[in-house]
Length: 65
Ligand SMILES: [Zn+2]
Image (cartoon, rainbow, N blue to C red):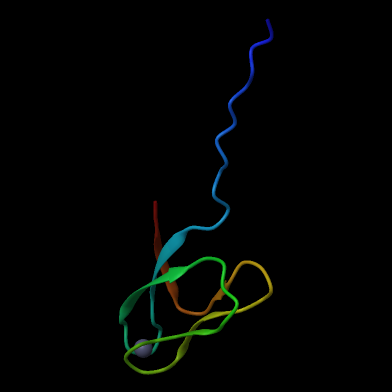
């Protein structure tokens, strides 16, 4: 009997904690986004959509996983 390998799908996207460069507000964003993510406080772009992984404009603090 063959042993079957159980593959656990690795999530490609994660949540990231990013700090706004303008007002230093810390915000949780999704690493894959179809929209530009704006700071909730000052409306600056924190992450820009690229069609894949978001391009982070603010300061990346850490991953949340
Ligand atoms: Zn801000």
